[in-house]
Structure formats: structure tokens, C-alpha cells
Image (cartoon, rainbow, N blue to C red; front, side, top):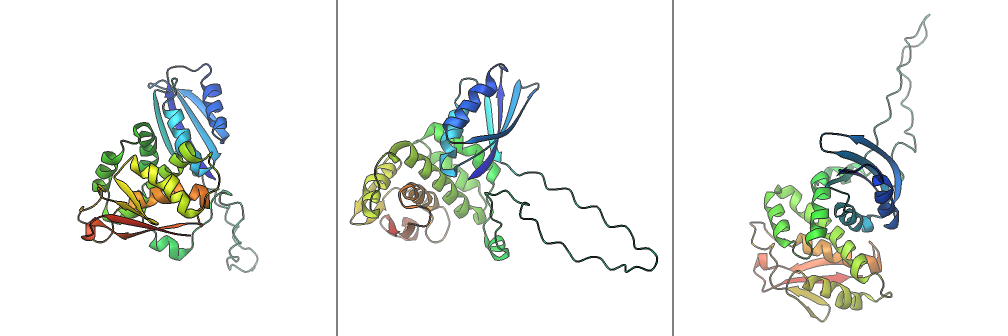
Length: 274
């Protein structure tokens, strides 16, 4: 589950919250809080919602294209930190002045949907500009499948340390959205059939993709030869993972780019491990 804050600008106040609230609920989200105010832009409605991450891209598309919405922004919601405790008064009459032992952290200091990463994970994780990503995703939904030029432009602008993590994350979000939009009504399939019936048709909307036995090959990935070393089709790998997670769960499938044109191969090869 994810908590997201939406900021909507409209020229109409009456019925705005009701109309957009119905969109939120219809997409499986819960409206946690909202506020509405007048500004020079128009009527501004801020909504904090909670729901499944795989449905977020679809919700963003429907809010961003709603006829009452003039402009639309989305960002991860982070509750304000709790106020610091009041310092204890100074000791009197010879009492000990040693500071008390630090209290154990409360179990309620973070949202239920958030698991704090370990120190090692925090130190090694590549940074992602989440604000930029959340702003981009509704645009990708509106333009899909004509999104590769936007993604290549984004890749060029990102610092090298952010490219892989950011593009894989965007790919996973887009893949999960495409799966829910186009394939979610199908039955549960074995991994090989999921690749053939879900991953391959979805990839063919974007690139020239072929399936040879259990290996998916892409001949025209636009992410190759960008000056990086090694495999560089991070968005495609992330999207394949997002497509297949709908059938097999986040831990049920692993996507590996075993060959890449960026390293001299004839085509980019993606292999799947259950």
C-alpha cells in the first residue's frame, strides 16, 4: 500500500470533491484527508489517498484527464514528524544530573505501509527523485505507448548514479499498470505462458520483440549506446518485472538482462527465473 498526495487545480468548486472522490474510490483507494482552498490559479483541492501501488498509475491517469481538472500533481505523502519531547527539568537538591536512557522508538512512528530500511540498504540504495517520477507517470499514461522518447530524454538528464534505479522503478510501475489495464482478467498462468501471452504482446507495443524458447529478445532498444558500461535497458527490465508480478508476485519472478547491444550483442536478451 502507498500513501500519495494529489494537488488538483480546477475552475469549479461545486461537486469537485464528490466527483474526484468517486474516482479515487472506484480505483481501490481510500481518501484519508482533503482540503480545498481558493487561489490565483483557481480552486485547489489537495487529497491524501492510500491504496495499492500497482493501481496508482491508473488512478493518476484518470484524475489527470478528468474534465474538471485543469492541472494535476502527485507526490509521495510523508506525515509531519512528531514534535520532539519536552526536555526534562534540571535536577535539584543534589539529584543526579545524568540524562535518562533514550526511550525505545514507538511502533507508531512510521506509517503501517512503510518498513524502515536497514542502515546497509540505505547506504547502498541509489537515490530516486520521487517527485519527478510521480509527475512523469501520469504523462506516460496519457501518451502510452508513445513513451520511449520521453524516457530516453529522462535517462540523458539523470545523474549516472540514479539511472538504473529510477528507470527500473518507472518500468515496474508502467508494467504493473499495463498488466492491470490489459491482462488482469486472465487466469493464472505458468511463467513461460505469462511471458508469451503477457510480456511479449506488451513489449511489442514499444519495441521489436521476439520470443525464442523462454528468452525474450529486443532488437531496437533505444536505451543502448548511451555511454554506460554493461547492460543498460533498465526501463525494459523493470517493465517486464511489473508485467509478470501481477501473475507471480513481487518475489515470484526475477528478470535478468543476460545480453545487451550496449556490450556488443546482436540483441538485448531478457531471461526469466521463477
